[in-house]
Length: 215
Ligand code: ATP
Ligand code: PRP
Image 1: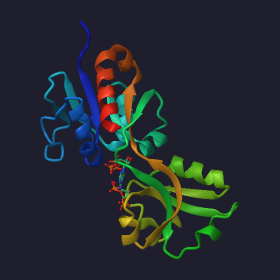
Image 2 (image 1 turned 120 degrees about the horizontal axis):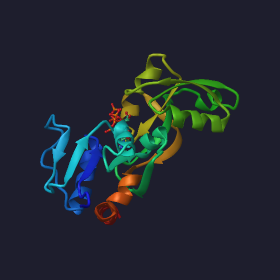
Image 3 (image 1 turned 90 degrees about the horizontal axis):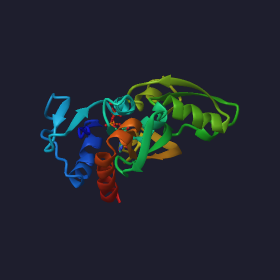
Image 4 (image 1 turned 180 degrees about the vertical axis):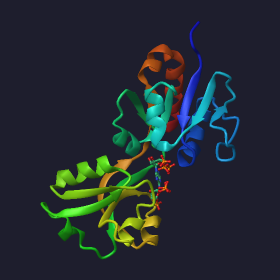
């Protein structure tokens, strides 16, 4: 008998909210709101489809090992994770933002980032930051943080940060300014490669529905 079950890995917050219309387009509606429930496995209107609620940065791991058949992850998370073992068929154009370098207002970044100079960078994205500064020939000491990067330059932990910027409100509220655009970020559908073969019909139907809804 073919396995018709599907497990979808999603994170709470903005990805979940922006994924709801895509799920609806595929005929899937969650039985509960993960923001209100403590449950980590959420049923849907389809008895064969369930959602698992994980940290945004853990989505590629659940999908890679087949604990989820597919999931949705930011490009930032996928670059840091490396994306091994994942098929990435679709850019869903959700959770859009920009990866930027930011410094305290008034800091002379042009002078401080000449080739051969050294900078202390606080970030949740060490791989993206290291590649960016290597490309500029700037030496960096990378300080890995897990959130609230904007605080680091304010208290002398770093010269600059590499972080996501959307409205710019967080930078502004902390008297920081964006000085360099590293790349644009949006979220992608990530699919377990074995599941794509074994559950091709079901998965392709979801991919097609997401694709139509995302365009
Ligand atoms: P984790 O819990 O794993 O630390 P997180 O707290 O970064 O993850 P979210 O804040 O929900 O999780 O972000 C999920 C994804 O949304 C990020 O990986 C990124 O692609 C995108 N994102 C982050 N910040 C913004 C923002 N301000 N505007 C739009 N998209 C964003
Ligand atoms: C993200 C990012 C910035 C903020 C930028 O944080 O790390 O702090 O959004 O958005 P803005 O330009 O619209 O102000 P998030 O809201 O995900 O908080 P977290 O890092 O604590 O998860």
